[in-house]
Length: 413
Image (cartoon, rainbow, N blue to C red):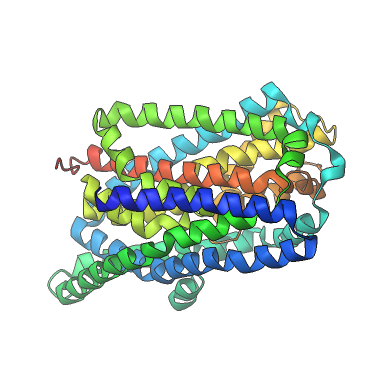
């Protein structure tokens, strides 16, 4: 068995073992022990994600600057960036519209039991909606300090700084060559660190899954949220079909090879509910797939801010479902206005924990729906987040590969 297959097997074993342990604790332990157990076992997942976050900022900066410098001129940056944004905007619109279609077809909000609301969790999210203003939006996009952006893993801010730095380096040619060479060497060292950090992935998966199954009453959730979760899952399946068909149009038979390459990042994102946790691994696997280094280093960081397909679908789906639960009627024109609002506001929360829910909470208030309605979906949100994160990873892998193909820089191994 080769190393990749063995590692994937370890992750599957960790998921199953975590689920078994979590269910056993939930069924046989006291509430006090369950809370303590979940808090401690979750540390395994937290350590893994922190290790990954440790290398994201320097990796984004080094690879993006080197990638832009290798592109050679501003014209190439604009051309490739334009192609990427065309894919991102198209995918986002499709995802948002699909969320509206599914929620209006199945009306899952009418099945939600109001007594199951998680009011404490909702209060925490409502407190975060103060971040939504034009001023805060600009602050999330434009970096005041690149050091602060790196420290807080503000990927979008770091991308903005790196683009300016890379374009300036490309314009100075001979003078910047030693700097670019040094950053290229640093990026390879960081990618080597990725292989060490990924060894902790099975432990992180085990901790995350065990904590979830220990604290969640799966039977209760299935009774009250079957319609909601089932409708959302159907939407995700349809979105995967659309994305894969779009990918096949450009990649043809190579799509299968791509999926084999990204299976590990998909599993890790699914089990840890963090698409960010697989960013370094995705960089490595996409280059192994044959994507140009300069395309990967340019498109992938942009995708993590502008191309979150699973999250986009969920935003319209969840917003309208909560309105349905409260009996708030929304016309089609209001729903499409909401779609456009979500298209914009979702870009201003890169790096915000549980960003999808923060965006939904803010949007509810704007359209006359009680923002505390977010409490209705919190009990099942973790399971939805598993599929959101996995879909985000797939979308960014396809975007990077397709742009590489458009540019004629997809190698065949």
